Amino acid sequence: MRGPFDILAEYERRSLGHAVAAPTQAAATDNIWRGVAYRIGTRRLVSRFADVVEIVPVPAVTPVPGAQAWLLGVGNLRGNLLPVVDLKLFLEGERSVLHEGQRVLVVRQSGGDVAVLIDELYGQRSFDEHNEAPIEGSDQGRYAHFIDNAYRTGEQIWGVFDLDRLTRTPEFRQAAA
Image (cartoon, rainbow, N blue to C red):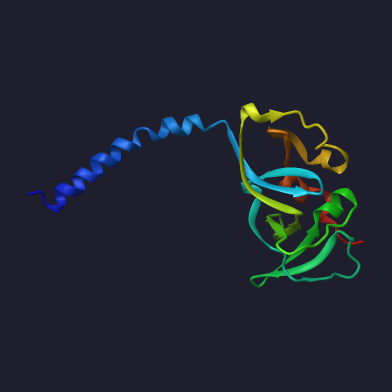
């Protein structure tokens, strides 16, 4: 009859046997890019997970007098005030149509987080190096400053939108009208 120590020793032996394969699996996924996928207008975009603090429903917004039109106002997220920006209005000059279930991406920036309104959230997307595609159309207008590469899945082109670069843009940081 085996004692508790023998059973634990057997579990450890089997566990260590599986751990040997882990580095090989990690090496196979080194060329995979993962991010948060969303839509702004007609553009499908993805951003690095590191750029997005969290994704939440649109908080109640209090307008800020004298602010740019794309700054919807200030929202309260669990006791923290943060600016809420209509990203479509900032990038395209066209206001987003608010609807139930809409989300904001909370993005870290120096001086405090900012919430950017998106039209639709798709969740996590993964692409490997074979999915890289020409940017084609995703880099037009103001988008060109924030998209350096793109990926293709089927007929869809996903522009990689740099939220960190957005938050460092002087125009974005200066919301006063």
